[in-house]
Structure formats: structure tokens, C-alpha cells
Amino acid sequence: MPLPAPKAGPMVPSALAKRIPKIHLHCHLEGTLRPATFVELADKHGVPLRYRPPFDSAQGDTGRGQSFDCAHSARSAQDDTAYRFEGLQEFLYLFAAVSRSLRAPEDYARLAAEFVDDALAQGVIYGELFVSPSVWTFFNPTLDVRATMEAVVTELRRARPRAIFRLLPDLTRNFGEASATETARAMATMTDLDVVGVSLGGDEVRFPARLFVEPFAYARSQGLHCVAHAGEAGGAASVRDAVELLRAERIGHGIRALDDPSTIELLATRRIPLEICPTSNRLTGVALTGHPHPYADFDRLGCVVTIDSDDPALFETSITREYELVESIAGPAALERYVRNAIEATFAAPIEKQAMRTQLEEAVAELHERSSS
Ligand code: ADE
Ligand code: ZN
Figure 1 (cartoon, rainbow, N blue to C red):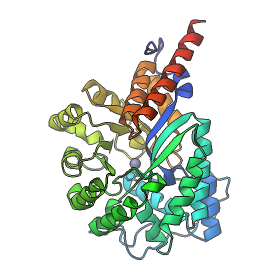
Figure 2 (tube, rainbow, N blue to C red):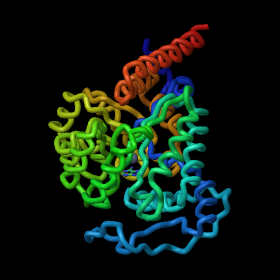
Figure 3 (cartoon, rainbow, N blue to C red):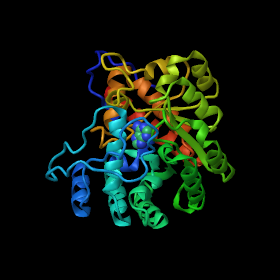
């Protein structure tokens, strides 16, 4: 039973957001790295906290090749401002810098262990997490990817039975089609390591969906699910291409689909869930400040909205905070619906979905009891 709408305006304390079971559908594991751990690992490995590719322009630079680095800033492990950026492109460089600080399987094990601690503390019960192995090997070509995936999965499995985490390795647009194919092939051999699909992140403008038709078709032929970021930096056509060319089953962000009613209709009629990350969209400039975040528009237009945190540490947020934002603005009934949508949008087995529905019902019923006693 949905909870009633809040009586007062947006600042109503978020009772449901804290207690509701949480589902990660759009969370990059590397983007959960605690800032203090980032600084510590960067120091340990002697790598800078900032990254820029050699030709920092839109002139066909793939981000591959030699990198030059800004001077290593002298920061202490207490400094929680290690994560600074302006706009989406700078954010993607920060994501690269964070990935470069992870150099060995034990670093990834630590990343995953800290993620599990943070997730369980927030009541996360299920997640399909992005990892970016082609970024790992870009910075560290000799890294043993299978050993690293094993290190990650060993830690993620420690969350069971309280939470189940699976992986959606990212094919990363910036490295082009050949790298995407190589990654898709490698990941198809790692379903024993909880790989359930592939995703597509990175520079959406310079590396459009049409370049990745083959690797996605291959992944699908191997029984992997397919999801893609789209409509974040690119326009509505990029969202349509992700659905029609890549056959993406969920869309990360999708915000720019709102520019084109026919793309919205496509998403709504095919029931393709949108993984919406409000704070990420604000900080990368995808959603305008001073205006309501457009997730409510998607909802009103009949699209399937889900809520997540993208790269929570880098955006100085958390899944709880994102749920709180939504609850305080759209109300608890909307938040509950978005979590329900997320459960249905997972690639979990029917019996697992049923268990998640039950956990949701129980949490909501408990809150009703509290509020009526
Ligand atoms: N990789 C990590 N976060 C991303 C984002 N928000 N968009 C595209 N690629 C990403
Ligand atoms: Zn993302």
C-alpha cells in the first residue's frame, strides 16, 4: 500500500528513504571509492590525483595513448575534497583518475569490501554494479582481469544473504569498437563471476552507439543482458539508438529523451526502465539547477523511473541521499513506486524478485504501523 503524500513541502523528513530496501541499478563500483581510500591508494602507487588525456580537446582524441598528469597535489587522507570537477567531461577524467589509483587485485578487493560495508549499512538488498575492466587495463595493461574480477566478487559475495550483487562490465565508448569486442568476449567467459550483462559508458558524443552494434550483438548472443548510458551528453537520438541498435534493456540517465516525444513514446511503450541519478545529473550539468529534476516528467509521461546514485563517492552522495531527495520532493508514494520499478527492472530470478517485493512490503507496512501508532 503506498504511503500518503507528505503534508508539508519539500523539507519533510525522509522516513521512508532511510528504511526502504534499496536497489542499485546504476552504480559504478569504482565511483564508490571513499575519498580517503583514493588518496591513500594514489599515494601508495605514486599516481596523481588528477588525470588528463594528452590532447584534451574534441579533436578525435580517444583518450588512449600517453597521458600527461597535473602535479600530484599534496593532500592528506583526511581531505575529502579530492573529488572535484566541473561538468561531465571533467567528471569522466576524475573517474579515470580514480580508476588509475586501483592497480592490483587487492586494491579492488578493498574497494569492493568498503562498498559492501557502505551498502549494507544503508539497507541495499540487491545490485547490478558497473565495473570498467577496459579502463583498468588502460592504466595497467598487465593487470590480470580475471584475478581482479575474482577479488571483487569474493568481497561482494560476503554480503550474502543480506544482499546480492552482480556485475555489468562496461564496454567504455572511448576505447572504440575493437576494445569493446575484446571486453565483451572476455566478460562472456566470466558468468561464473556473477557477470550478468554488459553496459556502455564513457563519451557518448564522440563515440555513438552505432560503433558498438557488433560487440553488443555478440554479448547478447552469449546470453548477456545489455544496458547503456544514453541521453546524458547525447541527445534523444542517442537514446533511440541505444534501444534500437544496441537493444539496451535499460537506459542510464536518458534525460535528453525528453526533447523528443517519439523517443519518450518508445521508452514508455517498450517499458524500458530509466536509471535516473538526480545528483549526478545536477553536477554534470545534464539537469538544470533551479528547475525540478525531470524524473517526475518521465513518470508523468508513462516511463519506468528508477533512482540511483551513479558514482556516489565522486558526487558526494549515496543511494540513501538520492532516495531522500526524491522522497522529500516527490513524496513517499513516488519513492516506493520507483523502488518497485527497480525490483522489476533487475535481471534477478523470479524467486529473487519475489523475495525483494516481500522485503519492500514489510518495510512499508512497518512504517505505516509506526505512523499510525
Ligand atoms: N562512467 C562513470 N560514470 C559515468 C557517467 N555518469 N556517464 C558516462 N560514463 C560514466
Ligand atoms: Zn553512470
